Length: 304
Ligand code: DON
Image 1 (cartoon, rainbow, N blue to C red):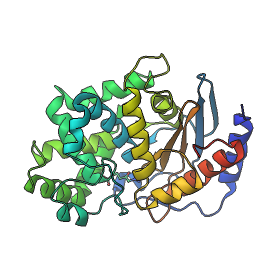
Image 2: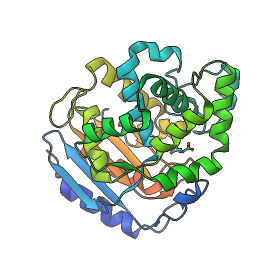
Image 3: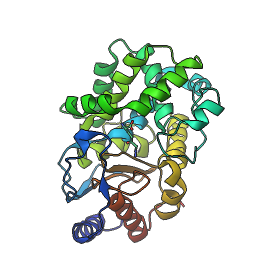
Image 4: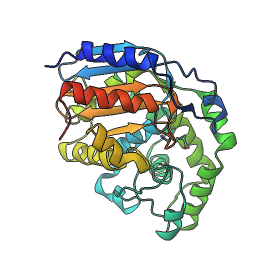
């Protein structure tokens, strides 16, 4: 096994002294006040041993990372029928773009862009009895952590400035691919994005995707085929118009969020979460990307 702790300590030391940390997201006002100097990285290996360096217990808004968790729950509930509503191809566009949605009749390219996640949110609003509470319970169960919660101030802040998400949802609705009211679906979507978690909690949560669909206590949530497919979608779509770059530099399935978090998994080996609030121009954490590149280069562990 590589010396994970040494590698993480080096990554953290370097990140803390890097001058160019990118820019904190400001289009969601509540995210604009994050401390750009924060950095953490936590890795959970196959045997359940946790390694961490930096601010790994600080909670942050997981934002688009939540799209993998809603996808996982919707896939569990609907099975392959889910793909009648949303595709599995990379878009090559930024996360909030609308033009393909218009050209492709309201069927979003994949579940990890905003439009696709809104359709997945609609599926969950239809399928679940208490959508927000049921999603929270699902995440708490996978993570084995009953303290995980929504950050209501972030959800409210995003609703106030979520104009592009409203545009996407109404466009999808106009094509007949949204069963519920736009307000109801977006309320759920803004809440899922507001989930507040630390790097350590994310590493525990994403263990299920590294461990063939089973959580740390070996309860099964997804079958092998489903986990293969979700990991494939993370690899090809998890970083929007930077997905190729992430596969090239890091070589793992992963997902980013505008809160500055990035998760990645090495099937049968580890799950990892890095956090640095400064983003690059594509909306992905600048130091988070550099950290994961170093991790796979120095450990020699990527899927390729
Ligand atoms: O819908 C939005 O714009 C945000 N709640 C999530 C976007 C996001 O995290 C993009 N990821 N890098």
